[in-house]
Image 1 (spheres, rainbow, N blue to C red):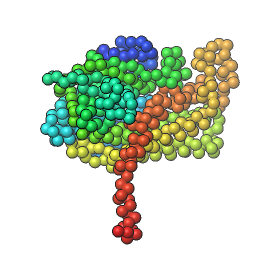
Image 2: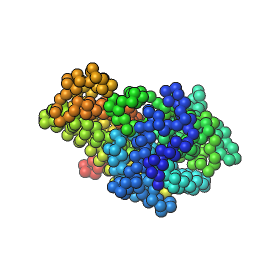
Image 3: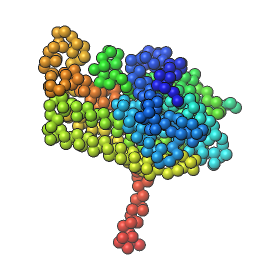
Image 4: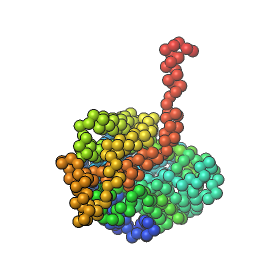
Length: 480
């Protein structure tokens, strides 16, 4: 397995096509806006090297028998599913941000089981090809970006009826040695920090959408791939070299609009090619795994936010107030409820025909439905506890200015247990997690990541066993 430093150097050696704030970058490494996101991914490698976390961060490959990073693992039992959630919580606690490898891990498991099913139905060899890709990723310890979400254009129309057919990624040419694809994937978390991109369809498809039923993997520096980094609230604070004002200058996340402009995909890297009946199954399996993930990563970040709120209360001198204690209790209750859902859908997992384990999909959707709500309430309560200074405090430069610094230290002092500087650092972290760059990963991603809230409600409706529940009543009441 790679060390964290080896990971950084491996990304530096790649020649990706990245644009950020109108500037074309040679590499994501070292850029003040992008480096914190690289640091978050680096943590997934660093912890795997530490004795304390090695058991949680690694697994034994079912394909080779070798020790691998858990982010490249194919889940072999319910314990693997549980350890995945525990690992994600720890990484959230360590980085207070999105660490970007979850989408790829969830995509790997979804594609593995789906290619097995496709091969059984059609006699194709996608599954063997995907196993070779998995062994490559495991042995090289690669970070893989999972790419599912298309721009979608007019949502009332299927892909083949769009005014612009490229609004869903599609095959534009089939050759004897592979295919040429064109289109885009949006909201691509961590793609500029990834070695490979694993592409999947984004919705269920009909026969007329055969060209859109494509799944494949290519290196992220493949010719024709362009990444346009998305804006985040307060992102340019990172350009000011002010760690205090950023709130969390060590770690962060990153998203990109990713363009595939006539990208060639060789046959051995194709895992679905026109099998429209399996597009919806792949989407549902990926969504289930990823909705499980939110019961780990968002909980870890929530742990940090709860800790910051508790410290803010102490710095304000109100930690013993009953209503403050009660708000911290409520934040903890909400956060642990999310974790309980993540663990529950893991413990209730089951094997797929391919042999790997899938979570309980109903409970995974319940988990994600709660994630669309509870982090927002945790964030609200943290802002309530912190107070208005969280958003009105002077800048770090003003704190360091010889004329204004002493005034800030004098008038913004509170509890004697905290320096004014440390008090402001705590407030800025809360601002970062609830309003700044980290709010993308903690709040907006909680709402829209792994599908919109309505998508989970549809799945809950499908799997809620309403007829069976009505049957319980009929049996008790002797109703025929």
